[in-house]
Amino acid sequence: MKRAHNFNAGPAALPLEVLEKAQSELTNFNNTGMSVMELSHRSKEYEEVHNETIDLLKELIRIPEEYDVLFLQGGASLQFAMIPMNFLREGQTANYILSGSWSEKALKEAKLLGETKIGGSSKEDNYTYIPNEIDVSDDDAYVHITSNNTIFGTQWQDFHIETKAPLIADMSSDILSRPLPIEKFSLIYAGAQKNLGPSGVTVVIMKKELHEKTPENLPTLLKYSTHADKNSLYHTPPTFAIYMLNLVLKWVKENGGPEGIEQRNKEKAELLYDVIDRSNGFYIGHAEKESRSNMNVTFNLQSETLNQRFLEEAKEKGFVGLNGHRSVGGCRASIYNAVTKESCEALRDFMIDFQNKNQ
Image (tube, rainbow, N blue to C red):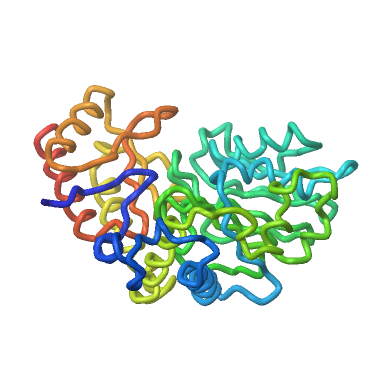
């Protein structure tokens, strides 16, 4: 069967090699006579997968020893609440830099749990850029950013925040898409379903010293220390999602690690942005150039009628997931790590052809 050109925003494309490897092992993993989905999470066979996955993350992201690597559930959305529950104490203020809808959602949860402030925002300009004017303090409980904004197609090109307060980042949509200055962050979290694997597991990378900030009266499962103390095996983890994460990490390593993946992602993004920039306004990019995302290319056409015609014809040609988010409309091509250059070339050619036929 011919593979679709998958530009879904999440759950998103997975490498074909990873899917084929999982398929080959689906009913008999490592000669156990069972699927990895059937293994006990306490078994030797599963624990080897679990620990190897942690080691691969440490290797690829170059995570120092003073960090824990955790596998949690509940997606990034649960992290929106867990972070202030663990680290926002009475008398402190959590600082949120707003660059899109997901940072707004993170702030909304924190407001339920303590004092917050907005240290920077591009909301007044419909999130067309990453905020440049940032107000942070060493006394902040923590500073929270969203590194890539899937809905608006903007991305932090560098992390221009200088503070002694813990810097926390939601990297759900661009983790492992490029090298990462890990030491700059106290905590990073990422839902897997865009760059790391299927939905179901959330990766948290955090400095061990943060555990000291957690109050004693939190429910057990909502304490990061619970999961750190038990190597993310306090209760049944999402074993199949972690196995798939393991295969994706091996694929990243085989493709040059974050450095190799970054070059590949830049080439893919340039294919599409070049069409937008050369279209004389036929395609209208949402993000300002210096803030453009290499993960989500967002654009509109000159009318809603053209938007709909573009999306309908694209679907007929085998392109999937090009609708913009329901909150903003328009078009969006999510070109995460596993989306092939060939799919981006096909979309580029379709965009050029569609313009020639409709201008």
